[in-house]
Amino acid sequence: MILLRHGQSEFNLHFSATRQDPGITDARLTPLGHAQAQAAAEHFAGARIGRIIVSPYTRALQTAAPVAAALRVPVVINPIVRERCAFACDIGTPRTALAEAWPRHDFSAIDEIWWPAMPEPADAVVDRAALFRAEMAALPDWQDTLVVTHWGFIMALTGLSIQNGEHLRFDPTAPPPESIPWRV
Image (cartoon, rainbow, N blue to C red; front, side, top):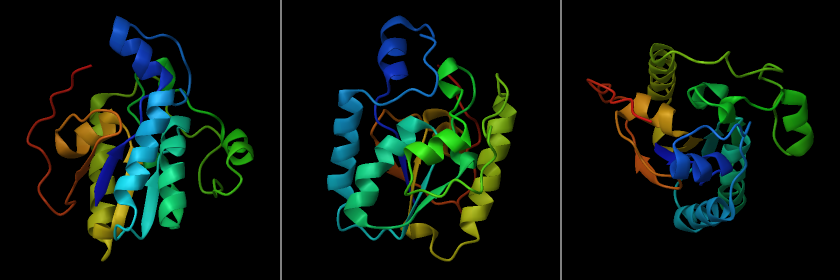
């Protein structure tokens, strides 16, 4: 499968400059983030992708939108691939508001408040990643899946840190990382 980190968000822009939480909840993409999402859509155009799994955070939904439009494949909203709740940007938007903002997506399978209380322990993210890894490994077509997700979730799955708008191939049948170098 392919893991795509969402494009640059308003939170990422401010946090990278100050290393302080700017207090932005459910951050949206910046103009650079939208450009990164469009670049991903162009990169994956024609790729063998049968579905997109996306986190319910706005920045992930905005990143997935041009990719889904280019590929014309189903989008599955799944909070298991959400970010580790550690900052204000990890406070999400309630399901009913997401459904209103994104009427073409089906949010009916998620709770109204789908994000956990803050902070989410690192072990909880690792457990969530292990569950997702097992679920995906059981699917015969996991290779044809694009997952639009977040830094912390990618780190928990792979042990690797990637930048906004970057992607990597991931084999859920491979052993999990021996260690996860959590750094902010």
